[in-house]
Image 1: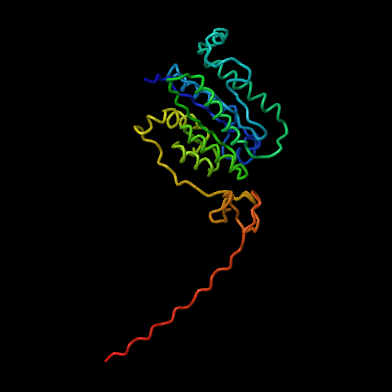
Image 2: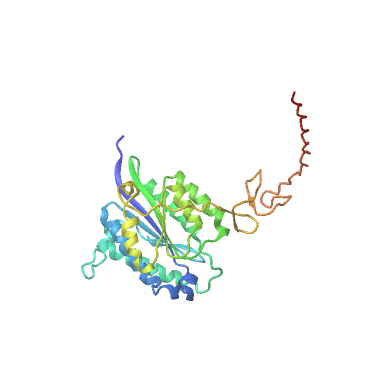
Length: 302
């Protein structure tokens, strides 16, 4: 049966952690604000929709307290229904679809920040946002119908630092994306992310850390706008060395050498007689004594 191309689905996960965007250290390096960054992201999203009339897009905001769909908005109609677009009046010659996407994203972003005035912790809920992205991709693939091929990928625009406490959830999401043939790309605004390095390497995506946030749009259009099927024909930044360190289950620290439970494969930085995950008690066996080999007497020469 011949497959019918239905375009590509792009899910953009944006790190909107207010702790990072409002930190004084970030302001010393660059003057770019979250609204300015969102404007560049919206230009990239519109460019993706212009590439093909069948392309689809979704935007997820990853906050420190919750993850939320910025587009499509919760309870709204499908993003490609012509009835909804017909009700939107074009302003300054802007295409109605672009106006709807930008309006919905900014409204949901303002509501997300307004409803979370107090941040309980500084870690961005990135693993939860990626799980939401995979659920949305799975739903859109079911709605596409039999015989239709929907190429899906996820782009993560990350600002805050990694959280080792999300290691297990993050790796579960990564292997799920690999099984579903979903590519994960990463555009890093600040410190390098070892978790996203592993996710991009496992799923065949691109990982890049931009030197300046003000040039974000250039990297988005140059590196991440072409679909994965065309990247082999382009000259892209060279691949980086992936940090494959794992996070221990006891202190949530990235380690290179540790102890692994033989039952549940939990990782620990220090030895413990009982596994804290599956409560398995380990039996300590005494190492056998090594016998010293006797030196053979050398035969005397004649």
